[in-house]
Amino acid sequence: MENVIIIKHPLIQHKISILRDQRTGTNEFRSLIEEIAMLMGYEALRDLPLEDVPVETPIEKCMTPMIAGKKLAVVPILRAGLGMVNGILALVPSAKVGHIGLYRDEETHEPHEYYCKLPTPIELRTIVATDPMLATGGSAVAAVDFIKKHGGKNIKFMCIIAAPEGVERLMKAHPDIQLYIGHLDRCLNENAYICPGLGDAGDRIFGTR
Image 1 (cartoon, rainbow, N blue to C red):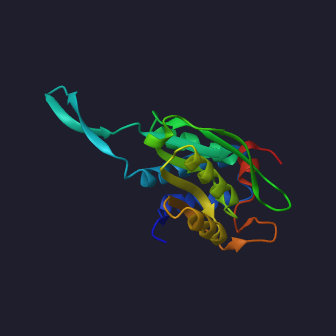
Image 2: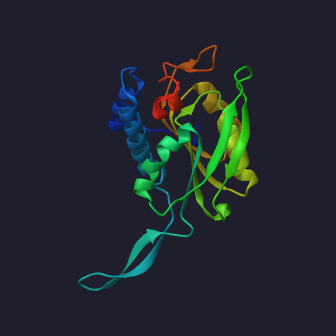
């Protein structure tokens, strides 16, 4: 699919392998999520619009490029998506941050919204939605639905691990977005967990069970 970008950089692949290891503790896991998000963000933001602005160097005045317009909005899907925010903010500190709160029904595996707060004017921003895991795709589809409902147009979705089922569902529902993936895994199991995956990303980021 044209708008699906799997980022195969060796540093990203190496760090994802450490994430998978069940021996990786909370502090290291959290740091790795941020580092991977920053590396992925470098690739995902390569098409941000630029405009020339006047700057005075120690030598002379010149016109030099800076990010144009209302810049960037980072929108994590709570709660695991929060782990990726600081990695992107390290690249673009001026970015605004929204939040979308979803929880997954344990029986149907379908998402339910409990919170949505987006920076304005959202329609003028490049939006990066974050969630470490793209499993069934239900939460991702719902999150993009909410962003579009509030006026968002230029949407990128960034996940570290994805299952083919989730990729297909998200891109079928929203073929106009760009999807950035750190690693495409094999499949979902009967409990809708990604295999081989890395377990529950939220629990591992926040040290909960």
